[in-house]
Amino acid sequence: MDKRAHAIVNPIHSLNLLSQAEIEAFTTTRGELFDLYRRCALAILNTDSNKDDAAKIYADFSDFDLQFVPQPRGLRLEVFNAPAQAFVDGRMIRGLREHLFAALRDIVYTEIRHSAQPVAVAAAPTDQVFRILRNADVVRPNQEPRLVVCWGGHAIPRDEYDYAKAVGYALGLRGLDIVTGCGIGAMKGPMKGAAVGHAKQQIKSGRYIGISEPGIIASESPNAIVNELVIMPDIEKRLEAFVRLAHAIVVFPGGVGTVEEILYLLSILMHPDNAQSLPLVFAGPERCAEYFSELERFLVGCLGEGVRDHYRIILGAPDEVGAAVRKAVQTQHVRRRKLQQAYYFNWELAIAPALQRPFLPTHKNMAALDLRSALPGHELASQLRCAFSGLVAGNVKTFGIEQVARHGPYQLHGDVALLQHMDRLLRLLVKEKRMKLGEGEFDYQPCYRI
Image 1 (cartoon, rainbow, N blue to C red):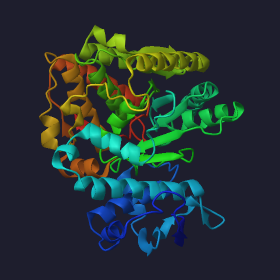
Image 2 (cartoon, helix red, strand yellow; image 1 turned 180 degrees about the vertical axis):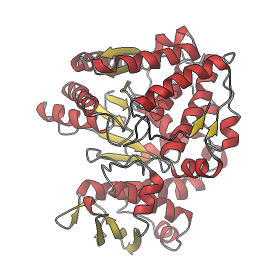
Image 3 (tube, helix red, strand yellow; image 1 turned 180 degrees about the horizontal axis):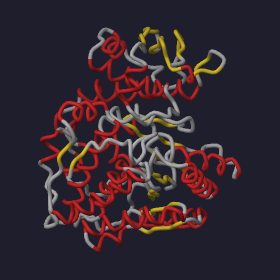
Image 4 (cartoon, helix red, strand yellow; image 1 turned 90 degrees about the vertical axis):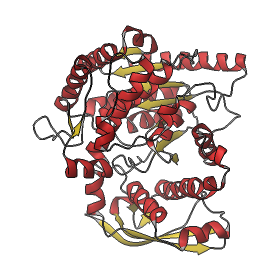
């Protein structure tokens, strides 16, 4: 692996003001908090990586290390054996410097400042999500609605990436900003396209917000377009941050992680306490008709015909996607203004506690999932979300990979018809090489057994 032996990194904006107590808390120990940041820092410096196996990435850079050097106005970083692609002519890329200190900012805030809050406040997930986003200057009350969340796979073919970029361009021309999971593939494409659209419209304040979490950041390293990076404590708060910020959501073809995101959102939209709707568009090249047909077969087969009311499918026609999303965002603007709701954070959405509690994908927890058609639609969607979250872990997250290596594939139990729909969708994802980068139908080793 190409590595840079040593580099000194000074903060640009984030973390240039810290209290002495915060500096001491972070620099006097190399415990769990330090290791958490070390792993996030490696993922950030491994930008645009073509690998998504977190365990392999950490093994390749097992000698990567960093040191904190206290300064009068904050911290300076020294990094050792960092990925060489993070540097140009011996200097770290400016955007990556920002990302390093943005990650440190979020970890310090979450672990040090948040732990000092009263128990009642610290226990409220939505309040914690809002505080982290506010601390990162992501929620901005003086801006009209224009945040479009884009979900989709990182392991996608070139034509799907180009399509996502074309949709991003159409969104950028209409003055819309992009929020993604910050990785490559369908996360990078919309940002890159929107950047060109913004440039043509002479929009110099374009926002390309990447939201990640420690468990996934190594397999989805932040791409180079991200100019606002936020690290949430876990996948559940990451997903909640997406839907609370979104004024509309576009979903491109993806793997099990994308299906997890869809199920999370549908569980919210199908909840009886949610009278409002969040605009949701499934979009992809015309070649992806089979993918969306199979996805819809799975959703309808598991959650019922009513699920169709919550999304729209557009094949091809990137400009049509842009126009439809712009119209949906304008409708959201009118609605929130009429009801005097906040533009910058959707407090109105009711999110069930089951969607906010972190799900740990152990074999026991995966086997205990309640996958029965008799459940109300929003509850079944929540259970299915946990199942797909476990498959993400088994494919690319260090914890899940270790669990599967130690105990064998996850076991999923439930109603036969429901699991048949799930199996059919998963087989398509394997056939279309959407499970992992570089994996195909014959060399992908399933981390699950139905």
